[in-house]
Amino acid sequence: MRNTPFWWILISFMVLLDIYFFQALKVVTSSASGKTRTIIYVTYWVLSITAIIVLIILPYLNFDKQARFARTTIFAFVAGLFFAKLIASLFFLIDDIRRAVQWIGGKLFPSKSDGNELQSEETISRSVFLSWAGMIVGGGLFGTLIYGFGNKYRYQIKRVKLSYANLPSSFKGLKIVHISDIHSGSFTNKEAVMKGIEKIMKEKPDLILFTGDLVNNTSDEMEEYMDVFNKLNAPLGVYSTLGNHDYGDYASWETQEEKDANLKKMLDIQSTLGWRLLMNEHVVLERGSEQIALLGIENWSAKARFPKYGKMQDAYSGAEKYPFKILMSHDPSHWKGEVLEKYTDIDLTLSGHTHGMQFGLEIPGLKWSPVQYVYKEWAGLYEKQMADNNGKSQKLYVNRGFGFIGYPGRVGILPEITVIELY
Image (cartoon, rainbow, N blue to C red; front, side, top):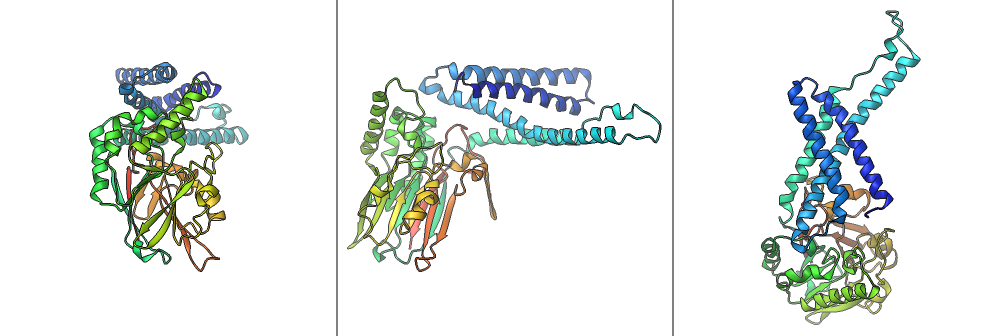
């Protein structure tokens, strides 16, 4: 992104935002002493200018593996300040619209009650209430993001029971652990990650399914965590698929050969872990004398900015005969984009990708995250009744992610281990 027009537009916008925010800051500090105002103003501009300088030079700094967390944390602070000011400025904007309307009204309909021709020229003052409201909301957002740093390893177990009339009797009670979006390149606390793995194994799952994004950018991010994730095992196996971050598409490569070698290493890593990577194919799971099909495809997204590597037809071919089918597909937009339209006998699709944006609110009766305005299916269970299939429904479960990327924390949307029981 360095030196791109967008990057410099963003920097320019931040400067203008700082100037705009400062006007409201002067309003709320107007009653303070001169010395206090000076301290506040100097502190504000030192922080603001430092944030802009850091954002400018950050892309040019090379961090070794141990310092990546420092880079991510610094960026998160800068981004947190930016969004806090942006949200606060929405309140200021409402106030300025009010002032503009009032000023225009004064021009069009000047008051003549006191005969003062200059009344419409008077400056309309800012609302102290709206200025304080913006400051409080913006400050609250920034404080919340700082608090979220401590939540990135707080693994929560989500338990889901799913009933299917067409599930073979031998598979009734099957316990599946579903995880997604490990993003090992973001980890800095190996012991905390191990505790998450221990939580999984305490569940004694029959089957473990991982739906992609093992790394952030390159395969070497897994080197330090091989002896953590190789602890995952289950009687019916551990199966995985690739996510959009696993292909090396977001790293800079000198040659295509280097990128290809990285992908090959990614495939080898999963084999070394003892995981069975499904690349547009299916396997048959057996219990007793009965069988079901497990399908896994490469990343396939209905969103234009993400690739369609997956070949559903290849994965599905030959699976038609099995009475029950589970699909692993990293991006949940695949469910509506292709599965519901063309593969109506896929009973359960498992996805990840969204992370619940690592920010939102989940309380009884309310589930919200900004990511829902991009992905309609972004966290938890979704169901679609099939009108032409004897009342049968297709289900999608979107895991909130085991790891994190970008923002090194979570607010309201905690890292997830999903335990699914089939009946």
